[in-house]
Every structure is written in C-alpha cells, then in structure tokens.
Length: 507
Image 1 (cartoon, one colour):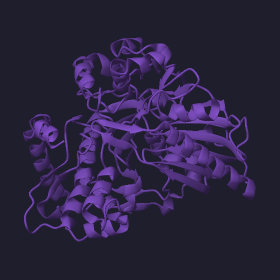
Image 2 (cartoon, helix red, strand yellow; image 1 turned 120 degrees about the vertical axis):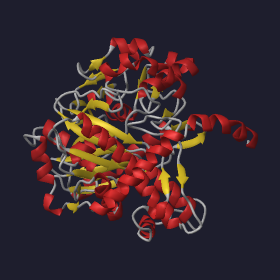
Image 3 (cartoon, rainbow, N blue to C red; image 1 turned 180 degrees about the vertical axis):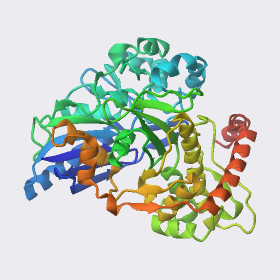
Image 4 (cartoon, rainbow, N blue to C red; image 1 turned 90 degrees about the vertical axis):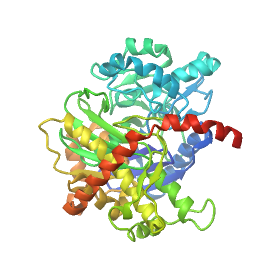
C-alpha cells in the first residue's frame, strides 16, 4: 500500500508519497512565510495553508495516476501549538497565532504564579509558545472571535478538518496545549478552569496514531474514503522517524528551532519544572522535551544579513558552511547567544534576545557564523544536560540527529564535541515524514511494531557517525561556563524596558 504523508512545517508543507517498504516515491513541497511585521505577533494566513494542501494533493494525485501508484491512505503530522478559531461552518475567524507569537507573554507571567497547580497535571510550563495562553489572549483581546468560535484548534487539526471534515485532535497534539492531563490523557477540568477556556471550544480527542476519519472528495488521484491517520506532532514523529522507539534513546531535530527529545515508558516530571512531558507518537509512551526556539531561523537571518550579496537574497547554505570552516573551534573567542525568539528550556525566558560578545578587530564574519552554530548547539546542550539529570541511572550512549541544519558535517561535529557523545545522522532527510509513515503503517496493520517499520525503511549501515573530540569538548565546557555567566548578569527584560522609549521614538 502506498501512503501519502502530509507534513506541515513552519516554513513549508511537504507531500511525501511512500510505498509499503518506506521508499520515497514522490515529494512535493510548498514554501511560505509567516508574518512577523506586527511586533510581538507572528501569524500565518490559513488560506496559504489551505492552498498549499490542495496544491500538493493535486500534484500527488496526478503523479499517482500517471505512474500507477495509487494512494491507499493518508497520514498527517504538523508543527504544534499554533492556534486559530473557526466558526460552525469551518471558516477561519482569524489568522493563526503561530508558536513563535509572543503576545501572550503577560498572561504567561500571570499564570506561572500557579505553575505548581499546572505543571503536575499538564507536564507543561506556561509560555507564549504553547496553545492555552494564546487561547486566553484571544478571549481577552478578541472577545468577538472567541464568542463566535465553534472550535479553537491548531494546524494539525485544521489539516485533518480539511481532509476529512472531522473536528478531532490526537493525544500528542492535545498534550501541547497546557489544557491536557498528560497522565490520564484527557482534557483537564482544572486546567480549563484556570485558563478560562470552555470545553466545547476544543476538538474531540483520539489516541495518537488513530484513523480519525476518511478523505472527502478532494481531487483526482486522491480517492474519497481513504483512511486518514493523525500520526502526532512533528517533533514526536521526527523522533519516531529517527528510530527513537525505546526508553533511554534520545534525538535532536534542528529545523526552524531545535528540539531535543528522550523517550520514556511513563510520564516524567522535572522537579524544577524546566522540561516538557508530552505524549509520544507511540501509544503508551511519553517524550521528555527541551527546546531551543531559534536554530535554522537564526542561521537564515545571519545568512541574509551578513552573507547575501543583495537584500532578500539567500546565500547558498553550502557556502555559508564553508565560511564557518574558516574559523577554528571557539570562533576566535566570539560568543553568540542566539535567543532571537527568547530562550526555551531550561530557562524559559521570553524576554531574552540574541547577543554577540567579545568582538575585536581581528574577528571576521566567519567567526560570527561559527559562533552562531556553537551558540545554537550550546543551548541544545543545556537541554541535554537537564534531561540527563532527570533520567537518573540511564546513560545516553548516542544522540541521533535530523533536520535541515544537520546537512552540515560541521554542525554535526560541533554537536558531538559539545555533548561529548557520538552523534548519529540517519540516511533519511525526511525524519518527520518517515515517522508519520511508520505510525500509519503500524496502525493499518502493515507492520507489527514501530521498530520493525523503522528498520524496514532505514538502512542503519548508511547512517553517518560523528565522534567527539576531547580537546574541543574541554574548550566548549569553558566557553559554556562563560555563556552562563553572561546570561545571569544580563536581564533582557530590563534591557527591553529601557530601550522601548528609544524604539517608540524611532517610529
């Protein structure tokens, strides 16, 4: 059976047609941009996502008809925690508040005073990244939208609705809202009350990996009535697509942001409430997650600002990568903290911003570029260190990696040196899509286990291994201690408050 995976990312949507052996037969990608012109607001037009989906379906359908490779089912995975309101006819009432949107920061400060009530139920901190603060922001600041909303939902739920007409969410996506009891795996009455959200505004929950509906009449080549699987959130699926199927395995996925995930057989709660506990893409398992909010997006920013020959022109990543190689480990002393979108785990500081330190006349743009890569990986390393302490007695033998940044051998080598663990990059460049394929193949009975499906699709002998350099690791340990001192000494909230009059006068 051929399976179509719809993988919705922050900057693009992919349609991936796999055969039953996990071979990628056809790929169609639609790129788009989020709107960051509104200060703290980061939004996406739902019409862009709808048009991207329908365009991809048409292309896949045409390919399937022309090549005799009929589509037998659809599996969906998407980026998590963005929010939109739709009316009773399924029409959007606003644009998506994307996961990077910061307008709910004040609400988060208010709700975090009750974190001792929230975290033990949800496994979640309260940050602008997650869904519940956005929903409450809509209720308080756009009351007419909240009142007229039949449902408040994320991007994955919206895709499922467009495909099937069903208003459903799976347990892995629901666990990203801060409204979900991660142990009982149901909407929490206590959290709904705390965040002032009406239960009827939320979608019906189905288990992750479930067939949640069947395709409507969409286009030629995509038959009506195909089973549609909600495979789970993109990071959960990426972990599955990298072979994270047993407790104690760990991965880092570096796309727009970087996410580090360890698998657990039971819910694990950080005593210091720094890490996120969510439902895995594998039923009956959980993920422990940390996040760095700007990774590929930070590289793209530097690429355009420092390396492109003309405004809005992209500098080929391969050339950017080669330039980084002109700078030695430690970037000739330059320290870059890449907190463009605030800090994720373990600090969860929405006021943090990117900074450059220790720049002299001897430094070059190659130093800046390498320092940025080292800064991104240093933030991931903070998450890894925190996760390791939670998994007492468990030794992580290796770190699997995927995502756009891992096309760079230098990025992967810095990871190995910083973590002091071997770093494994599997052969597949579509870890998230492959995870959604694995989920559906097991659900539809084509494979007996998630590990069996993974090994059927992935030739482990073709994975690339990067071994740590002890000398570089010692250097990075010293530099990371300096990073920590810099962060502790600089309150970016105070900086922003002091600079806001300057920004207003400049306008």
